Image (cartoon, rainbow, N blue to C red):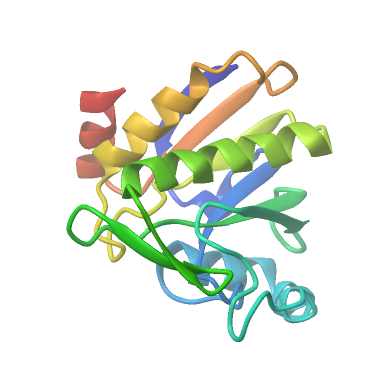
Length: 180
């Protein structure tokens, strides 16, 4: 599996799938999530509204991945994942009625792992990632770069030809390169 990067807008990626840094509702939001929903068109929202809730206002948990059609995007698929919010050193998440504390870096690696696992299951050869959890979620591009580098080392990615990281700014590219 090759790992490449470029600066740009992920909605224009010419890969089989793009990854959406989604919220737990899967109904669009700000940043990358909002841009993907706008570019994919109203069919994406309608599709996501039909996904059963795991609990009120939760269709996906932190670290999980779920695939939808790409609708109006170049990509045939969108792999949605809910990244961790980096506040302090621990992430507290309600799971099946219990509060579970998880290291946000480990949760971010699970996002990357589960997105690649979804891609492999669907026969997807090329995947574009944004810097999951960077920005308003309090993480950094460097933390995402470490997560993707760590997960890339697994031997199970036979069949996935290329992962592209699409970064928003020159500063993001520099942070990514420092960790990659």
